[in-house]
Length: 467
Image 1 (tube, rainbow, N blue to C red):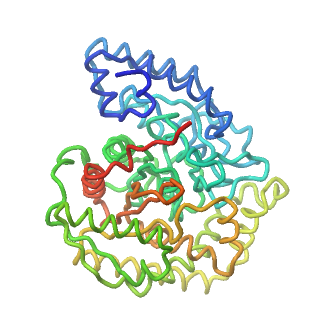
Image 2 (tube, rainbow, N blue to C red):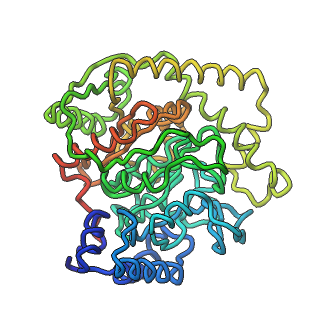
């Protein structure tokens, strides 16, 4: 494989080259580290780069390959770790000032699982403060590699920028209200948000425990499936992890989607979408139908609107709980946006919270019943296209502006549903726009297969920013 193509190779291509001994993990890792050194001073995707760890892991993988020992598709693959995942001996800042010098003594479960699968850690990726909506005022946010004036997505901003810019082959992301899906759409990558409880949260700093989902962010659906399989599974250290066996998402990935029923609520989707987003959804419908799926129009449950309107209330209370060790004792070290969320949570009355909780339970039941009639749902990521950072600031300033931002994402964190976000097109400025598919609980393999089928019929995921 020519070295010029190496930055944007797929994990499958790396695995094949490793087996054929035409590439070595040391060569690949060194190339990634050199690319990070050249580009990241401008892109700011990484908080901490770990070259010593990466080269040591690459040498170990190379020695194992020489013995004919292959651990799987993640073996020898350089990845980035979102900086809320505890890493032994390597600082984990959580995007905050309060933990800027925090050095954990153990790896979190999901990082250990990736290491057990043979993955190589290039470093820790930048994120918003506490995984909420904005970066700490003292942090330089990651830069969208497609256009520096545009939104890189939050909170997994570094995890979106790094794979898109060819600085790693995959990254851990987390999603509480849309934080895998927003940066995946903004940077033209593929993000899989698994079912809540599929991936252990042990050793991962929380934004809101019952809403937080960990998942892979990669450049194609097959890579997301491979990384998910390495990350997921029951963990005795996290009693909320699910006992269901983790599927092999790559087995049967080429079976296609003929006969699948894909639902969409035109009023819910098109009623608020800007033309460029509506165009992406129209194209997705056309391609999915051409691949043999049946697109069914149906109404979303009536509790969908409360889910995105009241998500912030639920998130605020759980965030306040997560920050009890530091807040309000170290309030001065917090940025104003996260501090305001925590204050809202601390002030929330029990009656308000219980109304939201009951609506959440009703919505979860309504959605389960909806999936009796369809296999997947087709959704935008947000109503607008690929906004500039300034335009997004204006959206947040408008009355109820955050409702539009969360309209298509927050309900599926409240339900714990798995989703996959993939590139669906580009606007007139050449900026990417993604869309998402939503599945039944534990149906990650179907989501990966459907996204892979779409990516086999389109080339949006194979386009890369010019850097």
